Length: 260
Image 1 (cartoon, rainbow, N blue to C red):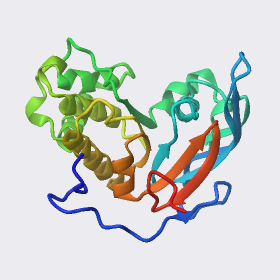
Image 2: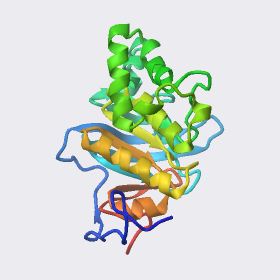
Image 3: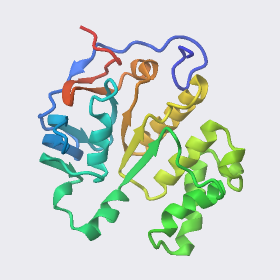
């Protein structure tokens, strides 16, 4: 992968000041978008996927979630999107305890979250425009609002010219941009990217990261789970490390690997 940082064409990313530890149970200055309080997730087979996790993500934060496979990253994401419930503790999104939601409230709270995966999950027989529009159609959004909303997010991700193409006619990067547009069309306050560059080559990966940074600059909180050490180290954002279901580090301006 090139050593150039996003937005630059040459050179090595400037190394910011040393990482600062952020206590996971400490109140933050911003309004919390997401908070986990003493969260444990144990599956019926007895496996503890998360153990006493405490963390707070303020509004507008950009957070990398790192750790080896099996560390608990995917479980944490499933709890945040309310696909699963914590065995113990609380998962709070924008002040709402997700475990206390009524069934009819779950789709509404999920629309406050945008999420993309490394495998895109696009509908192959629909155009880019229709893939994005479908996310609004299934929620009963009036047709008069769908067209302008879709056009807006396609401009954000730079796909206006590809609006009528189908996924099979797009590059991997364009398919991921389509997935990002679909996740953005509800105006989420929290954007979760689960290994969004896992299937992309290095240059395209940086383009996707630049797009996530732009989304974050729009005021959207971004939580990105990744194994991409170069991206994490170059950007020096907040890094939360998981191992064996526990938060083992929470640092500002950090590299992928702990720097002691």
